[in-house]
Image (tube, one colour):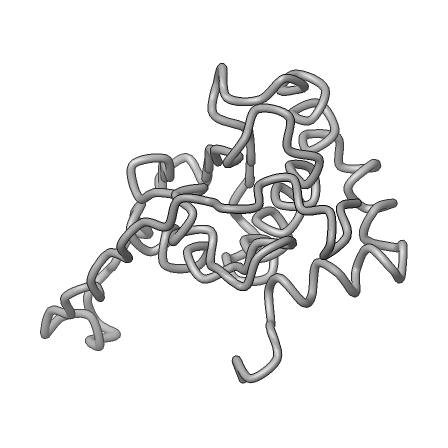
Length: 160
């Protein structure tokens, strides 16, 4: 893991945040069926903090609405994320953070798949394999130190 004095990406490019989602009158009507969409999934992951910087994954352009795919009728969610550098050692941690956030926030009916955007990381296949393996993900989330780091990404101090 990179330490604060040895950051891998010392000066990341910071991107503008997307505006807030426009609410419709039917958004709060319990009588109207409202399927999950890519914007809802993006809104769940956009504010996850990067493990190395006090910036959100959205601000670093690691996640974008266009990288979130939802097939509500097939109960599936796919999120691609783009590490800021091709050899980012935090890619697995970022993927775990996204996966855990979605597992906590979405209804249990959804199959959640988190992957690195094709061609954006040197160890893309290995990390995708880790993130797709339920047993490896569960084992990682049982590690108290790792879970503490992930929770700092999901719930940074002052966010509650």
